[in-house]
View 1: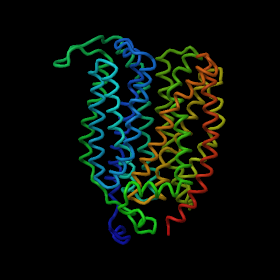
View 2: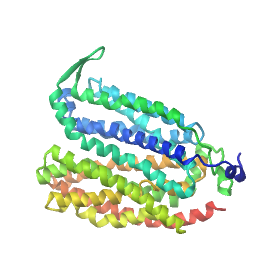
View 3: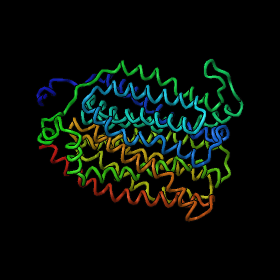
Length: 447
């Protein structure tokens, strides 16, 4: 086991090498969201070609992807705490890229369902290992900014998918079918999966240019010594013992992710149903908002937290979550109730910006109170929770309110307003409690 003095002697990777790694990981994260989101743009041609129902399509979009993505995150995270993280990411990227391409040669619901599950398997490998790599490549006062840059990939992937959505829709309508060797007849929606998935194999190979950094903060403190080389059961018990911070913090961030997934899923329909916009208009305007203001919020959140930290605020990263919810409550409640579409779009830009503030630094906050050997597992638990709650129930919650409370698709705007208000209020209360517990955990971690 390395001592604290050993770690001091070992310098962090050079800024050039560290930021090269962050940029590459950000590109991979962007492609992961592009690959998981592209199916939304192809729903209608898939439905027509395969004769699927809306329920089957919703299973392909959410459940099929989330099933293994959610449940494999924890064991893969545990592996990332002990094994070569670069290799884990490389294989994950290769798997999800191949499975996305395989979506393009499927011929029925079952085949497409299995392929989407495979996409989830591959993508489960990325974030736990990536956050751990970043944490070991930057000193504590620089991690928030680096993690914020990485998290930008989320909005970049979704934003590019939306911005290109109109182009994809027109292309799907005009290209018809093509004949490819061995594969035979390939329809436009299938060609789209192939075009999106295959480039990922090149990116997987680029991970070989990244060096595995030295693992830091392994166990020099009393807390670190407790967890060095522990089993998964013992590690889980370690987190459970500190549930007042971890579980509540996960719950607060789950509220934010639930609202974000609900907003992403239903905003196009909101603009179409409420303001009679076309899909191309939604793609052009809403896509641009996501592409610009989401990443801007993440970057600003990292910069803001870093400035607070430089001025001596030891809980700046966790405090940003509270700030986010405090700023979100009112716009999230009223966003969909405006009568003018461009006023709604302006408020949407504000919501996307504010929602991004804590996304990059939430993991940095967790890492401040988590020993190195448990950091990837902490991210695994985090990803498990926010995706199970956010991806699993966010879009469905809005749909249930629309279908069973209001019983009118035109009332979608009110369902979205209710979900926005409720999740942000609950998230604010949870984040306030988690902030108090974070301060306590920081003191213990220093012992």
